[in-house]
Length: 368
Image 1 (tube, one colour):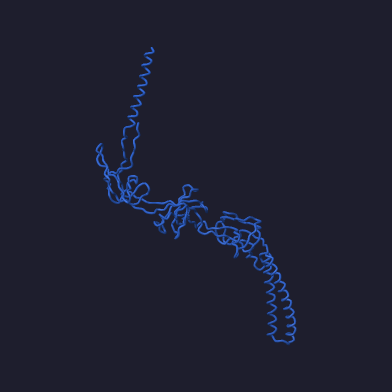
Image 2 (cartoon, helix red, strand yellow):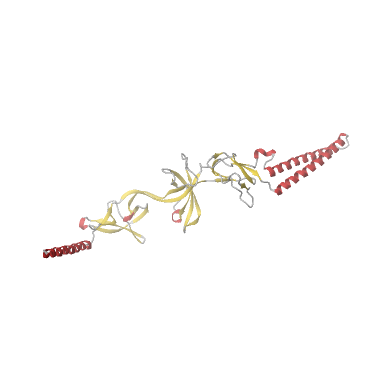
């Protein structure tokens, strides 16, 4: 019994050894090389590029106060449409003490001048009534009195403007009321009630009360690489897609190419702008991220093959033409002249015809 057990063990070990040898032998055999094969075909090819950018109004207007003060009321909200001249907010004036003192001094001086002019007028009128002075002298005194009255009125108006921001004579054009300068959508109101605001001057840009824009006049702004900018021309059509809006595709027309490059992540790029056709679109917002597809070059009805079938060697390009069938199949290297590529297919200008069969990339068969 022990004898048979030993024989079984020896036989089992021998089978494992032989099986391993056969497996390694099979694995060591060369794998047959198989290639894809393509027939050239006639098609249209377009070379396109995709530019990332954003949607923004052509012009954004910042509304600033005409006086310094404190915001007491805000009558509009971001997103509302306003007409030019509509009131957006109201400002309470904080008078400049130097200007206030000067305005008060002017009023006092105007009162003194008016009182003196009235005295002169009364004296001159009494003499004129007795025919002791000429009409010319009397007219001069009347003119002086009228000028003194006007000066007092102007001084009071100036004092009210400095102190209150508005005078009785120009109440409708009050500088305390912040009005929209254009008709459009309010994009932002960066101030709140109680905020201090200042007017624009030589040393300060002033506080922005609101930002407005015409949302029917939008542009796409983005950057294109220096290797592609030379293929662009003003007026070329573009397709705009917005990531935040599914199934929305907008037409645009290129209207600006920057004459100067800017460096972005180490690469030279040129800014471009395109006018967007917004007809029928009501959901666009300023600042949307967008992609613009531009056709740089295109050809129609040209001979094409997959770009993977092209072999590049320096400045030359080649394809391999299939000759024969079965075990007699061979591949002849053929120089070709290529044109533009869309990243998948490439134009063949010279070297092959539609009757040829072109070898493609190698397919490596898996060993069993």
